[in-house]
Image (cartoon, rainbow, N blue to C red; front, side, top):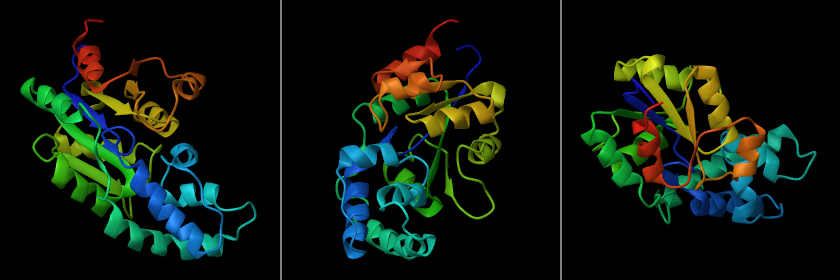
Length: 219
């Protein structure tokens, strides 16, 4: 990919394996409200568009919106305590970021997770490499709207022509489209390749090192 000097990463399912801790916290809320729990393989398809959307998919059909409103703070309280029990970077991600840094790439993380959590996780795991981390907050639309990407590019001093988006889900693919960025879809995250192909994804990374190979490949 010629002229690319900026990489915008999604967080959950792309650089961070958060599935087990998210599953535990959502199931805690489901049990507390008397709803059936789900497996991590089911939740894998629910995550990617914010926790409220995941809860809407997890609860029985017809559950009132007011109940989901009540569930959200219970989830957030539990997840804040347990969000790092099993969560960590995917194997090979830190090595990828190190290689990108050595080659002069600028990096950001944008996520539909709560902004404070995104910044905390970035500070803990990726601050040596990632200059900007943006999550869900007031005044900025969630992905697939382009707002977080545009804000990240602005903070990095980059343009859309300079950048590529790396993510694992249909939300990420549509975020890249809405931001007018090329997209690299990763296959170690929360979505299977067939789902990504169905929505139009064409560039895939089987492992983190593939991202660098794609970026360095001559068009």
